Length: 225
Length: 385
Image 1 (cartoon, rainbow over the protein chains, first blue to last red):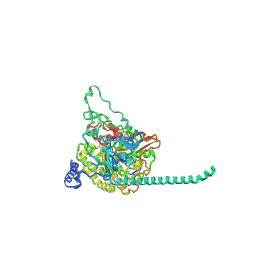
Image 2 (spheres, rainbow over the protein chains, first blue to last red; image 1 turned 180 degrees about the vertical axis):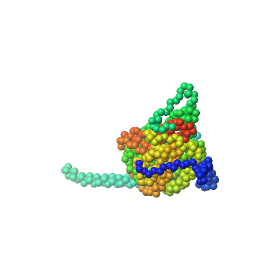
Image 3 (cartoon, each protein chain N blue to C red; image 1 turned 180 degrees about the horizontal axis):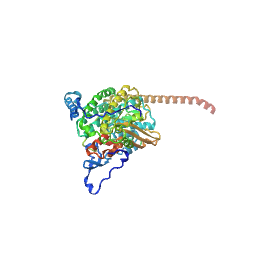
Image 4 (cartoon, rainbow over the protein chains, first blue to last red; image 1 turned 60 degrees about the vertical axis):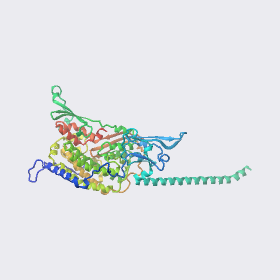
């Protein structure tokens, strides 16, 4: 611990330059500060910060996060991006997400949620669900006026209130949404290309097989003979 | 007044029998504005003099450590915001530091700089708010707190731009930070740092010559160094008594070796020194901030291989500590190789600083108790956890 250190200079009671002290001189100095602040608050622009809330609103910052929402591309019922993988359900710190996977009559997974509930009264707006989602499906909203007079139904957000369109996401967070859309598009193209390649390969394989079979056949015949 | 550590355990027994009528038991709190939250003190008074003081706390207990053991490592990050809710980003860093030690994760350069900037801004917030609170404890409701909170709000605006929330930041990640600085953020921060010096000048002019403040804080609540060290006191409380102990210098974490700053030390360790030491620390923080903003490099804000989902550190244990605004903030983690910590323990500075409250208050007036409690700078979210 050989760090250079300064020591506090203990101030004696404030004295006037003449050498004798007036009781209360320090108080008067403090009052001068108060007075200047009071006067400044009437004419200085940066001091007049009050916003008349319901009539006017402060702009929210682009990173501002509040309650999460689910993204769908065109139709909330058909192409919700969520696949009900429950990663967000597991990672959610206050455990406020409840997901039930949708299955068809044979019990096969349909890769979409039948129930997706988030309890607003428990959610702490941390944004971890949005961070861990691998399907670009859940994002944080900028909506902050969520109070309601129905404390049970009104605070439980189901699929109908959570699902919001990709356009909404684009409007809310243009940068993030643009990046996500570009990535998804690239992935889709890659997938399509891969599928096409697979198809072509399968076709080529089949052809090669047929050719091989055709080549093998005469020999087999020959052996038979 | 306690003069050496042998008297620590000699709290006077309460007089019983006829004399008991002479003593007055006061339950100060938990709904008392001077107790900084829900904190209660059972004080026994002889006239105005404190004979015994027993702190009662736990009103804000939230089971933080047990919840963390039943949640993944990442899930505990937002809960650390709620420990010391005045300075969430320091708590984030302490926890991330412990996990990085446990799992051996590297942090990129830029993220280290961002962390230093955010931690020092948090120190500014904490000490500024402290100046407002302690003046409130002395009866100056209003002005000082309003000035302090005005400046604090400017820093919180920066935090909101960066993290998305004023106070519940949830920003640090294992191996970096959650997102990069938005465009223009560093410039705004630089402007704030430039404007902060004049504000501190104003605040000092407002406070330090004030006769009421001098009369009420000088020679109030000091304890000898050895008692403070034995009591595990850290942070400005300890340095005000002249003990040169700051984890940024003693056991540098992050990139603190690269910055040129000093550790202010007091002499006596009374409430006055504790107030002044925080002002001097803010000046040093401004120095660190200027250097960090100048040197801020480009690069990754999080380690490219940092894992967010299914994060499993290897089996082992680690204790990560940082110099929080209130003292040594440490997290002790034991991992059994699963996604949840096996044991998760917080070393909260304001709780441990609070343990010597009775020793500081014995023999003084009840009005001094309020100031001494204020000078410890507790946040009940951290004390009760």
